[in-house]
Amino acid sequence: MTAPDGYPFAALTEADAGFFPSARSVGVPPAIPYRVSCTPAFAAAAVRLAAKRGTDLSALTAAALLLAPDRTPDPGAPQDDAEQAVLDLRLPSGHSDAAIRRLAAALALAEPGCRLMPAEEAGRLEGAVETLTYRNKALAHALERVSFRPLDGKLTQVRDAAQMFGFVNEWCFDEDRVVKRFRELAPVYHPDTGVVACRDRMAQLIDARNLLINHVRTAYRSGPWTQRRP
Image (cartoon, rainbow, N blue to C red):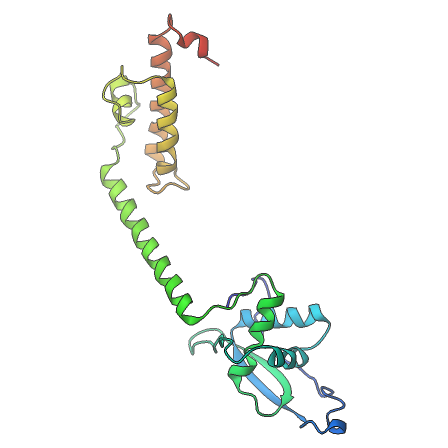
């Protein structure tokens, strides 16, 4: 289960001595203390939902136990090496930790940031993320191998700029093609967000674009390009 971020990750207590005040009068077993281990995010979301409903954790849990079907998946206790929180509740006897953690059902219905997810689905999603991460790294390595090498010194030759953009020579493109090609290459080499982030490549890519556009505008000064200049 996921829960909204930004809540305190402290142990949670519920001093609820007055819970089920009319229990004895209707023959309901008295409430007893329960301590349920859970993740801090789960506990924080439970506290927020209780406050939002104007109630306490014990009453909220009791309602969830009435409403949540038995097949509702148990979010599970945190691993031994994970950060843990404890929900201190007062409920009638006979509940297991797994049943109480089905409070997640109420959270999932009431909190937009929470969602119940079977362990099998979570495993599939984790596997998909690992696959995408591996493919992204493989793509980055492949792009690194086929990428142009930054030239030493300032870029001054049109033929070098054309080669950098993947053009056969300096006469096989127009300004539109230069701009389009630059927009394709820029996200690849952008130093902050590029798959193959490289400040030197990005700088020379900008120099190459300017050189090629200037070449086109100069070479075709007497042609239709003069009509299209901004």
